[in-house]
Structure formats: structure tokens, C-alpha cells
Figure (tube, rainbow over the protein chains, first blue to last red):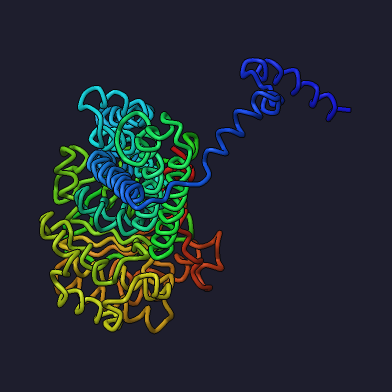
Length: 262
Length: 281
């Protein structure tokens, strides 16, 4: 009885959500939709594989990897200093009870900066920077750097704080400076997890740099957008296949790296 | 280093407000170069006493002075410098599992090293000889380049003690140095610590569960019970009656082996651990 009651209650609660999202799956299967989907999918075959186009795809793929890697590297330049300044395990005053007020406020402000950086999606940053620096990979690199800098900084701080703090607290308590404590206590304790997370994020950055291409930030995404606007299904199909292969490759590399480090 | 405590009380930061302080109204004088063993049943306040002297715990009442000055009246930078002249060895050796033993040992010397020198030491250890000699005193020199997580519990504890020999401190506060060692190693470890402290003129305060070891190796014994000073006597004046009174609630600890170390209860690392990181954005 109660199960039925809960089920009904859930339905009543969810109904407005379904209406708001115009959830009508059956429109997928009506005659007009069937016809246009079929036409779109049919245009994917055969994929374009002539050597000139493949060379272009290869170059753009490489550019996508480059955008992701450069973006992550710049992001690290933002993330690492902010992490070191904002993590509470490196607080000297928190050693003996509560953290002093001024350092606490300072750390909170840095945290808010990190949260603000990462809460703006990289797509929005890309749209902004495409207007500032023009079409091309630069906008993509800056967009990834800003969002991923905030993301990495916040998660790094969380990793450092959730790890075992005995070694680092002992060093601080015996008079080592914060930076010495970081290199001799915190880093050896958490290095594997930090690296593994960074590699995982690099993999995410590759995927997201493809999306950034759609707003004109260069790379494979921009080419895919061009071909789609030209209704050139064959080219889109080739690039989708290359993209799937790229993501699978990045996935494999990052899994291998994390296994080696773990 | 000279230590003096006046009606010193201290409580653990995570303790209930209503609970009595772990250490109450303790008055104590320690002269430079003295060697003292602190004994008492579990929960008597031995570790709290070490933490209070090490400036790891701010006294809740009373005051502490190190070489004539109150460390808690110093600026934060000065206080951190003062901490560099103390060496507190926690019961559970604070060694990151992936670090090499030689690096863990040199970490004891950090307060005396510049930042650049300590960075260089990560690439190539700066003072391998000193680390080797310290380790040799604890009969462990063949493990110098081993990773910490390849060592047994007893070996780790000895590495933790060897670190004291590298520190620039003039006061060693050693918490339960023998909790993971067998009797013959214990004998050697305590001999090494007391001998080294004597030749360097370092003041040594150690908490011990092994009462006979304490009486044999230390000239002055402090007995704590329920956070109160029970006695402070030369070891020759400590009688079996005094010991029975000190351990009357836990007579088994006077005879039996020391209870194992519990990292959760050790030190002040009860800072609430943050929740596990969610690997989402």
C-alpha cells in the first residue's frame, strides 16, 4: 500500500517536470521525424576517407590534443599556487586548535575565487574569449585554463585535506616551514592521487576541447561544425569515428598512467 | 633547553567542553640536559604533557616557559622558530609511505635548512652520511634507501627515533619510543637516545609504558594519574608502593605489555578529515 502511495506521490511530483521539459518520446517515431533522421543517418555513408581530408582531420586532431594539453598546463599554473595558499593542512595556526581569523578569511576568499573560476563552464569562457582574441585555438586554451584551473585547485585542496595528515602535521609542529612541509610531508603522501586526478582531467579536457571547437575555438570540433553546416554527413562520420578513437586512446593512456602510479 | 611549567592545564582541542582537562595544574621544572621519563596508565595525560611542552597544544590555563620566555606570547613566526628547537616524536612514526627512508630522516633537519637546500635534497639527499650514521645507531643502516612502506612496524618506529638524531633541536620529547619494539631492541633504542642526548647536551623527556626500563635508564621519573602530577622523584626513590598506587586502576599495565598504538588517538591529528573527494566537477 505504502509503496503504491509513494509511487503515486512520485508521479504527481514528476508530472510538472515532464511537462516543463516537453517530454514526448513518441515524437521521435512519427513519420516526419523518421524521415529526417533517416536522411541524416543515410548521409553518413560512406565516410569520407580521401587522403587530403584525412590529413586535415589528423592535423585538427593533433590541434585538439594540443589545446587540451596547453590548457591544462596553464590551468596548473593557476591551480597549484592557489591550492598551496588555500589548503588548511598547511596552516600553522591551525596546529594548536582553531585557525587564526585572518588566515581563515584569506583561505576562504581564495576558495571562493576557485569556485567562481570553475563554476563558469569552459564553453562560456570560450564564447567570451572568441570575441576577445578572435576565432582559433587561443580562445580554447584560455577557456580550458580558467575552468580547469579552478577545478583542479579545488579538488587538489580537497585531496590534500582528506589524506592522512599525520606526517605533515608532525613536520609543521617540529618547526618546518609550510613549503618544506608540502614537499616532505604532503606531496609524498598524496602524489599518486594528485597525478591520477590530473591525468583524468587531461582526458576530460580533450573531450571538452572538441565541444569548444563548435563555438570557433579551433580543433576537431570546429571542422565538425563546418561539415555539419555543409550537410556533409560523410565528413562528419569520419570525424566522429576519429573522435571516438581519440577518446578511447586518451582513456587507455590515462588508465595506464594511473595504474603505473598507483 | 630549560622548561618550566606553572600550574599548567591543557585539553585536547576535540575534547568536550565539560570534560576535565587532560592535564591539570601541573608545576614542573626541567633543567637543560636532564633526562626524564614520564610514566602512568593509559589516559593519564602523558602525551598531552609532551604536546603542551612541544607548543603543539596551547595551555588552557597556567603558563609555560622555554628558556625563560613564554612561547605563546611570541609572534607566530617566532613561535614556529622555537618549535624548530624542539623535537616531538609521536608514538606512531609520521612517515609518508612512499618516501625513502633517507628522505624521511633528512626531514628531521628541515628547520635548519633553507628552502632551496631542502628542495635540492629531494633530488639528491644532502647529508647521506648523517642519515646513515643515525640509522646505524638503531641497527638499521641497510634500509637507508628502502621505501618506508617496505619496512615493518618496528623498523618504522626506529626510523622515527633516528630522525631525532638529525634534528637541530635541544629538547627531545619522545612519545612511547618502544611501543613496537621487542625487548632487546628496546634496550638498544633507549640506550642510544639517552647516550646521544647526554653527549649533545640535549634535554630528553620520554613517556614510557615499560616502568622497569624507565627506572633503569632515567634518573628522574614523573608519575601522572588522571591528568595530575602524582610524584616527581629521582628513580632511586620510586618505590613499588608508589607504582602500585600510580597504576591502581590499571594494574595490568604495570606488568603486561603496553597497549598498541592507536593513530587516531595519537597527537592532535583529530582535525576532522574532509569527506572523500567526489571526482566530478
